Image (cartoon, rainbow, N blue to C red):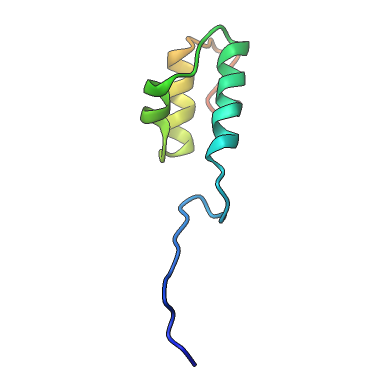
Length: 72
């Protein structure tokens, strides 16, 4: 048995490049709610938890009580 040459850790649990999908999703959501998803938001949210980024989006887009973080 050969030893492994490398081990890959993908922190969101899938071994695909999911970042483009997230970017398109956030761009669309921001646009639908009167905002623009730019590099600042990307840097702030990348690699963060769902609790962090949903609260960030709610705060940035000034979403009201109709948008609890669990819905976002």
